[in-house]
Image (cartoon, rainbow over all chains, first blue to last red):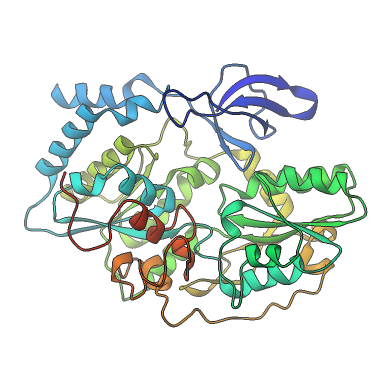
Length: 73
Length: 371
């Protein structure tokens, strides 16, 4: 889920959920972010049962496309 | 969407399938267990099994949190839900899990106040809004979900919410994996490790698999290319006689997990001496209960819970499915007496259950779906 707004005092954030299809907008939900604070608007979080448990961040060498390039080389 | 679309690229998927084909030893049969129900779902949703060589077999593990809840535990929940003062809250997929005589949905239809929540925080809100009622949250799930329950209990204590309690049925993933490896029923070559559990506990707790059992494990994400890449990494370990923990899901999982989540879990929970798992029996130190500091919010201490043990229906073979001993379609009642509409076993209830995944994606028989 992508962070849209953060309320530091309550350790809650409004996040936008993933789209289930290309034409659909994600759902806005309130998420507990105490386990990852501080979080920033725009960050992508892994959320389970209303609680953010991890951040998603990708190293350039770890993407599938990078893997394919590495294999070709 | 970032981190999703790029892991569903069909061209890269075909390239990975070719790499897997090139890496396997055609004389060898590979049995790789995907521990997590989320992986099982991804495998059948995206047809990953059909992209693998026929000598690479995926075996489904015990990592579906709904599937492993025994019938007696459901009966305990129903007994609480039927108390007139109680609002009983749970995740949606627990509603249709069969107890010995009925489900929580049946109890709701018969007048019990059972409410579905998205998060334990929703249950706490219901407790604040209904101070004259007792609100019980039926907490299930592995280490992925336990931090959410722990944080909610911490809030309940800080806000002194007196009418909220938790029936804690959280389980932990390492003890059943040990139990499976000690079982003579099953020979496994490697494991696709549970990415979401590992985002909390880290990759480190899975080191016992290579160190004590010489089995490779690759912590994996849940997109189709994640799973295929994990299979390739396991096959490459086996080809080079290595047994290691590798982390394919590095975009989310750190070696030591989420330290704050582990800290709050240590504060709120302690290990139960024993817990019954559906199909696996009693496994020591495999589940969580509330620590003494949170005893006041423990539904099992606040109310009288029957705690009876109920044997699974004879026709149901969820236990064998959860242990990876049989495929869902080999169960006597799969797709006939047991369907998602009228499930007999838990594996047909949850979307993460192997039987539900097979049923939903048309794997009703032995014949593979063409790639």
